[in-house]
Amino acid sequence: MTVLRDAELAAAFDHAAARYDTLVAANPGYHAHLRRSARRLGLPRPGTGLRVLDLGCGTGASTAALARVLPEADITAVDASAGMLDRALAKPWPGSVRFVCAPAEALTEAGVEGPFDAVFAAYLFRNVADPDAVLRSVHALLAPHGRLAVHEYTLSGRPLDRAVWTAVSRGVVLPVASALGDGDLYRHLWRSVVDFDTVDRFTDRVRAHGFDRVRALPLPGWQTGITHTVVARRAVSAPEASEAQGSAR
Image (cartoon, rainbow, N blue to C red; front, side):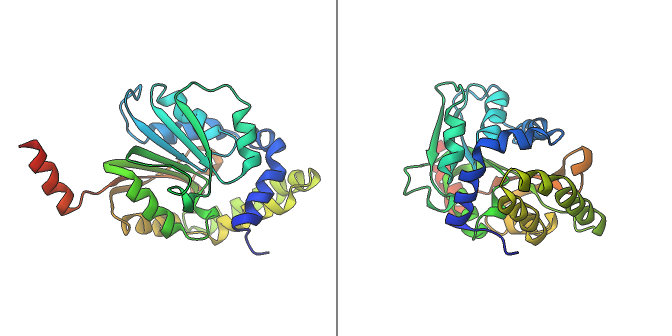
């Protein structure tokens, strides 16, 4: 099976939206892990005056994690699936949260404008056709020294971790999802992780797009070696540094 992309993937998420929260809730630690990754942004709490972009927000689980960690931040949450966003919008949110339906590759066209103090991307990068283009867009939207946290299935490269991921996907997730009519999406989920960067390769990719202080932090439980938070900071170019020094005079 090939992985799903673009319109096909958005349609698969639309179809699965009504059952998505129930399925992810069966994953031990799912919401706690998202909150842990949100804290790993290292932003001052409660986030007063900060602007945060939540890329690939889905039904709002990552948005809720950000709102819990940074309750006073202005959060813009974006997803390409209208069905997933409908589920998110049906939940109660503070006025500081807004939702936008757009692919991660077309943020400017959807009116999403920086600078943001941080970008949070959960389970996004392995789902986009061109992760390098999205990293370039994220870099452009971040303020100098803005933070990035990518919460993603990025395998360690050890055969054991790949085997655990495949066993959980085929033995637990796929049978349940197929019975609910969402087999195509969750077969994509399994395959997209196997085909995506290892965590070391992904950190190299992030570093190559103008980020520094790049680190990969594991998540606990059965997902150790399977899911990581990759945190980074937007590096400041020489012209930006000169401009900042000039404005400080």
